[in-house]
Length: 199
Image (cartoon, rainbow, N blue to C red; front, top):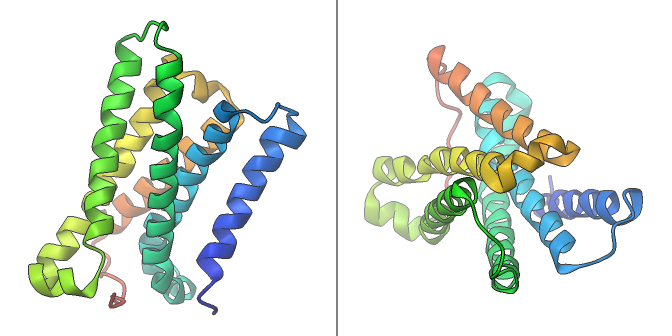
């Protein structure tokens, strides 16, 4: 399988979301809707990195895809950073808007999730594996499951749960729940870890 597969799949995800927002729904191109495309692309791309581990435990076919987990994670992190870069000016432009507890909590958990993803991205090299020791490094990377739960809360809490009433939000939440469900089942059944792929 080619090394460009994660980039191709990520581009397809962005393309589908762009088609949905700007062609199927016919929304005008604006920073708000561009940010929506970026935000949900982040969830699906980072989600690809997380779902491959559990899938590899259940289905042997997906073990070859484990080599792409790091790429999906870093691409998703880049989109998360772009999402933040777009959100900051939007929040400044909406300075007069009243933020309720849910909005504040949503932003807080999103910030914490981004901090975890940043830590994971910065330590995703062989040098850090050697410096921390493989077990410690792996445990640090597993914090990503906490971050993905925080992302779930971010989506659910934002704007009084408005995204739960929209198809893209529902699909994103379902995708994260599937990731967590597969991870949980693998843990409960005590399934042996997949063959680790060196970074």
